[in-house]
Length: 331
Length: 266
Image 1 (cartoon, rainbow over the protein chains, first blue to last red):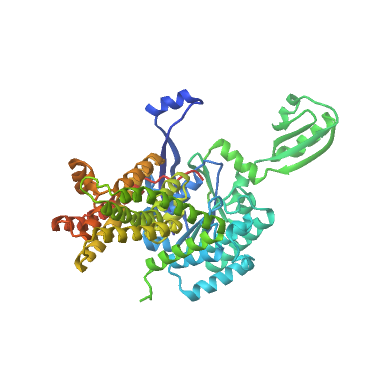
Image 2 (cartoon, rainbow over the protein chains, first blue to last red; image 1 turned 90 degrees about the vertical axis):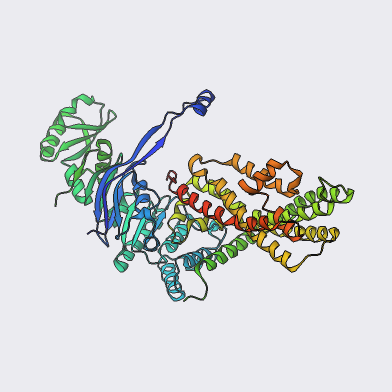
């Protein structure tokens, strides 16, 4: 049995709409048309112990809702789910002792206190022995380079420093599984890199299972051997990112720069015109036709410069977001 | 076996962290203390006026009114200092989804919600002035306080605190369905102030309702009646015992309500 097992999970929310203006507010006081949002709609996957899996998807795709069900914060509408043999929404103490959740846009540290006071509270809640607590705080603060900041009031810390403190608080009890919901959101490049390196190291050392959601491709590419793309509450892709790019990129991008204005319709015969402004154009051309196309374009158009590029993983993913098509990687 | 139970340690840490947090903002700390003293002083003037004029309301001597005002103030100190902030926080936590983190902690969520914040700046003046009023009132009444009556007073005060906690927690639970509960909070505060007068100034129906249905009069009125030897023994048993079913009821309703939690947008 896999460490995390998710079967036909669904989560539906009730909501209602309101037109602009006071009149519709008055109307809404007495009658509201109930609507249902299918935040997560019949998803299934398994995750093995020690795996790092990335959840990708546009805003509102259902990533965070899935994480909240995995951590027992939310009850699902339908479906089954087990994490390390526990059903999360039963909220058993032993289950809570074995996982941690970090949300990039919500902190759990008290802003009015230095981080070490909040960490001590976490120690009491998780019943961590003094020795283990001192050792873990020492190790993690050293690794994350925040040892000198433990006594500083949390609200005085920078976003990156605060996130590092949040990570220490989340890892104090040595969880078996960590859910990271956009942990690098708003951080500068160096802080993002540092946090990524930390998790890579931490996973290798502790064999912790990590589920990560992020909008930054670098986070996913660097850390996750496997990615699950969620779109409109459904799984659109489950597999290696590399294999995703192979599956979607049967073509290449030919980027052209002209010295005279041309007409877009003249380029359509070569492939899909992705962008065009009269002088610059990007055409998606089938891989096997690239050479032929380039020769023909150079002969027929006033080209001053051109490049041939692979379709990036980001573009591949946005292709999935648009299309909502489901692909499961074949082994 | 650990030297201290976990819940005691967590409670102590909450209390310590609150004090540290308070003292980080020195100006606010002193201002809150002063504003609370001013508020209590205002209340005091009003009760003192009744006392000084020697008015008796519905057979209650002005000394008794002073004593009950004092007892009410002690309980207000406990309520405002220990529970109120937490109950008000609950609605905010449901609305902005910050309850998420607390749900994931391996400790009772009801405990975390109930005892996380303290408003000690409000407790101390209410408590000190309340005790002073109670002592002066009792002295003026000239009643002899027996040891037994004092024990009954303490038991009824504990029961009152449990009842206050249970009733006001139950009143905050609709937040899981209707999210915003400002109106309920206002009702809660108004009802609370009903208790700073002897209950027999109200009509018979209100008294019966306030003792047996929503036992608000058991809070603050019963302990003083017991202390001055005026509470009949069956009401004494009711006063001490009624807090238990209310505590159980609040627990059951809490468990039902928490299942409704739908978090908020990420």
